[in-house]
Amino acid sequence: MKNEGFTFRKRLESFRYAFNGIKTLLAEPNARIHSIAAVIAVAAGFLFDLSSAEWIAVVTVTGAVFTAEALNTAIERLADAVSPGYHETIKQVKDLSAAAVLFISIAAAITGAIIFLPKLLMFR
Image 1 (cartoon, rainbow, N blue to C red):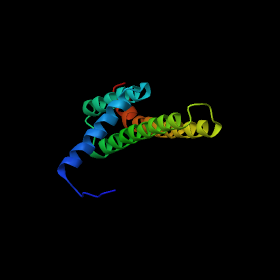
Image 2: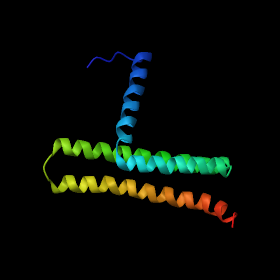
Image 3: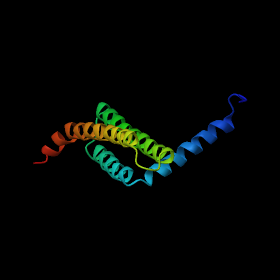
């Protein structure tokens, strides 16, 4: 394999591939649900005038959820391509990658509750 080094064109192409990946991810129903939650969190963040630390937490967990969902989708598609039929190990791999999304989604929900519940309770 010939290494042609760094070129601006290659860097632009890599962004194009990444944006294609985002487009593919957003076609997934679960990613759409995460997108709705992210939009709500960002809107609430502006509404409640979050501190810098709170924004960092919201952005970090939101990015982590989308990262986990993208990796889960990639693993599932690769597993389906490699083993289209049922295979117990493939099932376990897919279940584990789905569990990773669940873990970070729970963490994101808890983070959101810690940040937004006190602000919502002030309106009582």
